[in-house]
Length: 222
View 1 (tube, rainbow, N blue to C red):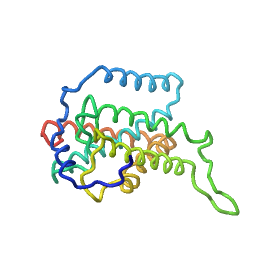
View 2 (cartoon, rainbow, N blue to C red):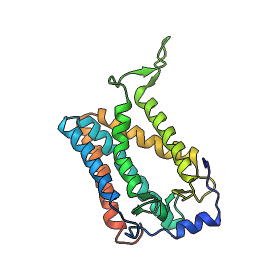
View 3 (cartoon, one colour):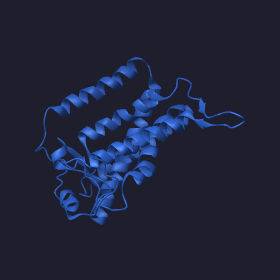
View 4 (cartoon, rainbow, N blue to C red):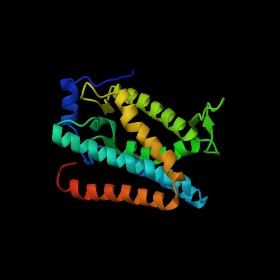
């Protein structure tokens, strides 16, 4: 069952209010297995010197963390975040809108998107009769964003409330446009940046993530 918009229901609000962040009550060994898979993928790419895939993975994953931190701040300020995960759907909740399993998936999503592009990343679709066409980087970003937005609508409709949308104006369309498109634009474009700009982007991105986590978690905001 697909759910396309939040319903503003009391049930949704109650589920969000019941979220216990960073509790180990549901913790189990899948945590370690998932982490080992992520390590295997990254070290395999490093061993093959496929550093562009690493850049893609880190670029998207950093954007993911900035979004999750922002979402948690929204929840702290306005009472409810834009999206949440339920206690019963995960082994460990990192922030109000992201669980361990979901975050580890996003650590790999950039690599997956990067590998889905043609080997020639200068390729353009629909380029004929003098038209420049659409960059394969943009096309794959749009396709991946749509796929992820639709899958999120499935998660929002699951019986264990894997994903919770409280606000009636938040749903598949804003998720697709404001969240997933930027995610996959980062993974598809950052690897081909000029090296100094790419390094600067990743350092600023991850430095900001680290700074916000160090400040906001102890402060009890996220």
